[in-house]
Image (cartoon, rainbow, N blue to C red; front, side, top):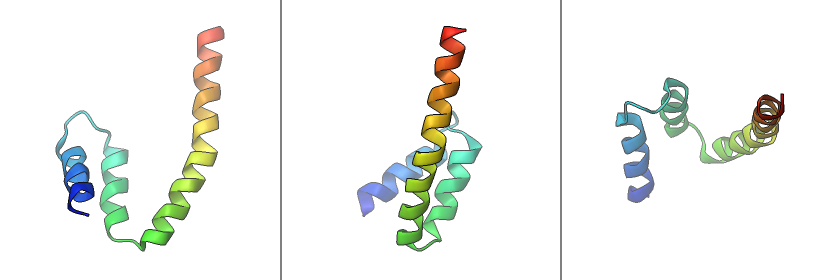
Length: 61
């Protein structure tokens, strides 16, 4: 657990990381871990294909 918390702290302190990611990490610390895992799975299923399609479209246009 300490290693995971240290990694989260590193991201939160890193100036190059997005505010969106930092806020998600702060919020996740306060939530039920099962709910966090469910949300992570949904985000992956919804946002990954969208982002990949946007990248592919921009590369091949």
